[in-house]
Image 1: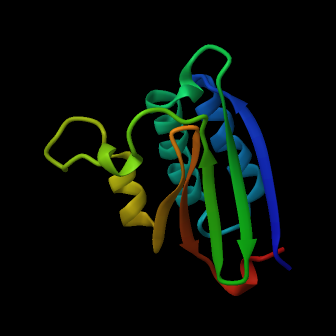
Image 2 (image 1 turned 120 degrees about the vertical axis):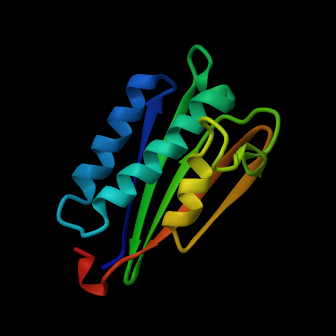
Length: 132
């Protein structure tokens, strides 16, 4: 049966660990749990480094939507200048590989929103039997 769950986090580095734990708890018996944790970690890191979510009092939201055969993961931030696509670095550059990692781990990823707030999302394929 499809389900979805979301949670708000403070825009701090400590919240990246909490976001991973949130995903880990939701997906504890799923074969893609480690991939999902890494994707959410990368997206949450970008939210606090590159958007207003990382400012004092900022927040971000992690959402997990499970459907037969796929898992949708999203991080909604509070917006800022620039677009996440521009933050993708080449493999030979130090740091800044989060979205490159996400793009290689997922079957699809994208961005919805604008400078006032956006959601960066990724889709992982799952076994149909993985839905609880």
